[in-house]
Image (cartoon, rainbow, N blue to C red):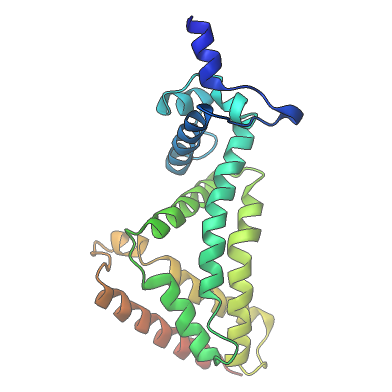
Length: 228
């Protein structure tokens, strides 16, 4: 009886090495994916075992292999789900409108990053990818470069087009890259920096709007100071 219950909990293997959940197995697959997402974000890929995931999901230890193939493929699915959320956000951040000026595009980009409720579901999903990437920086896996290509580089290229216009196309590639790095850092650090400086992170909309205005003003002044 116990063996039969374990087989039912794990679910049947599908063709081609893929494991597909069907019927009641959908709940088990969802629990495993949710537990893996939480644990990978907290500890990173290398510090989480299959047993850890299955125990957190209240699932049989064979569930990862049955539903996902192995830990590596489960990790990739966690990353892809996080990336899908970030792609939607990035599309919004980079969509100020065709008629928008470089300054207007910068305002829109900064506000998209900063003026949003950090407690919202979208913000929480985005934080998963940031946590995964943080672990990738210290303990890289083969998927780390995929995260960079899909989540970070499109935004950096977009910022570069804005900076090039602000610099009237007369700056070196190195100067453009420096400006892009400075702007992007200001969009990503408001949560971490207050902790480092023993300050309260901005939470109200008024506080976030004030921070966004500062980042835009500071960035425009810095970029224009680099004009040849």
